[in-house]
Amino acid sequence: VSALFNTPNFVDNRAWIAEYARWATRPDGPGIWEIPTPINCVCLEDSEDYIRPQNFFQLEFIISSLTLFIKLCKGSHCDFGYPKGTLGLAVARVGAYLHSHASSTDADWP
Image 1 (cartoon, rainbow, N blue to C red):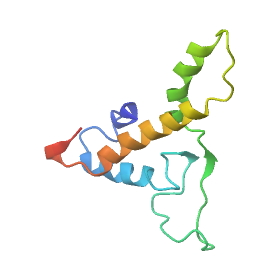
Image 2 (image 1 turned 135 degrees about the vertical axis):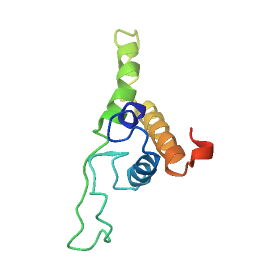
Image 3 (image 1 turned 30 degrees about the horizontal axis):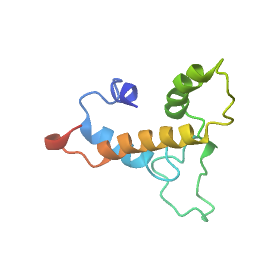
Image 4 (image 1 turned 60 degrees about the vertical axis):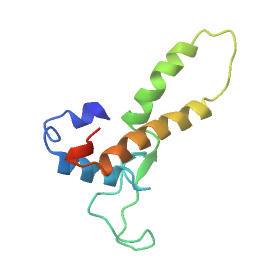
């Protein structure tokens, strides 16, 4: 996520970072969806105008967080199965980072 905030669209634009972070932490936002509901779509989910998000947990924020763990486990003498706990921790990590930016001001910028 920090790499995204260092791109030209975000650098030195704390208002846009905070707005993006608030959108990303919506249940249908880019914090957990590869193709989120657009930022300007604020109608209720049961509205015919609502645009549903797609591809749950298939976004770069989550995939990059899991990649290192999966590489470390490759070749291990045990098979621990699907990394549900690691996925949960990755989502929590991304969510905490986004929440810290969603409510930040110049005085408490992380």
